[in-house]
Length: 122
Image (cartoon, rainbow, N blue to C red):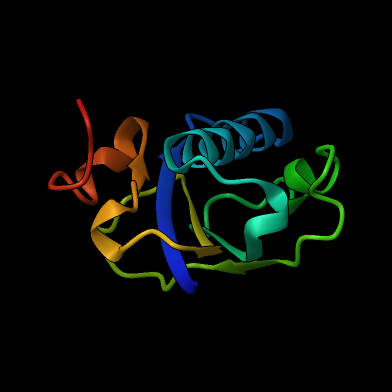
């Protein structure tokens, strides 16, 4: 068994608590479903937001989900590169799995599809 990283990102339209929490849940649920993983398989989740999203901690959305109470979560702010995608939440889910690197399904939703069009599904 290996530890694999699963990337994902999603954008929101406004810097408000509820849209940030809702988008975080949507992204995590999509990653989990696409990769058929359980919270018990997760080593940790690293969450970043762009500097324009400061209404809440996205980890709050995950901490209250059933079965996710013990999963280590960490939030941080993305490097503020000029011209980069705004209003974006990114997840790096480290998972214990037998899947190969090629079998991992990365998830890019909304405006975040522009980050990795090679991995985004239209």
